[in-house]
Image 1 (cartoon, chains in turn purple, orange, blue, green):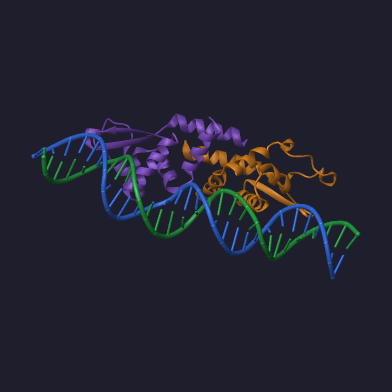
Image 2 (cartoon, rainbow over the protein chains, first blue to last red):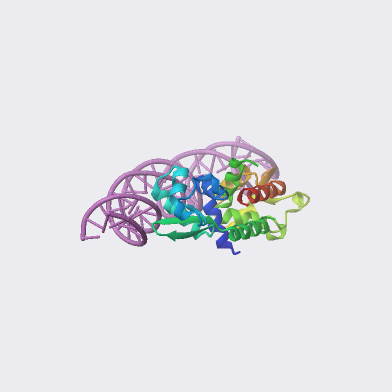
Length: 103
Length: 103
DNA sequence: ATAAAATATCGATATATTTCGATATATGGA
DNA sequence: TCCATATATCGAAATATATCGATATTTTAT
């Protein structure tokens, strides 16, 4: 994982709301149950994330995009809904890389 | 390690110069040899850090203070000189904590 | 005491980030 | 087609950060 990639991730984590969102996404039960037609989908609808975060819809939208650009989350659109889940592989790669850089 | 402590460290790391400084401080040979009267001291004189970073003296001073407040470095004053070294224990604690938070 | 060297602090400016409300776009239903 | 819902994008204002030069402070030497 190169220098710029780490930089992007550190920047993404350097905000309490975004950091919280990643934490919440670890456990689906931090959010309301999915709608019936979404029950077999992975991830959490951005609307629920926005509610839980308590910020404006536009802010959360830009934050989720930033997390996505940093590679920390994966997004999938299903009809009118966008779902986000953590990119566990990328997160682990980051932890490995930052561990190596700082040790 | 609590939430605010991690926040401070992530913020400290969220700058290329500060991140580089921590990296350079891993290896004393990234800097010129110490003066004879400092040869038995630990750490690197802030003047050398400033030279290597290529920014103004005042910027580096504030940056080193920020790294110190985040607990990433330890400073020691010897006469007119201030020396900085990494706080390895704190760094490892951070890596453990961020690994736990993100995993 | 004066002067020099090293470094911390201050104040200012430019730029980046946070956050919002407004609006645009995408999807779906009647 | 029109209307509704969900979400992305835009532009703006407030705040935070990066960085500088000037100045203050600390330490040392003469």
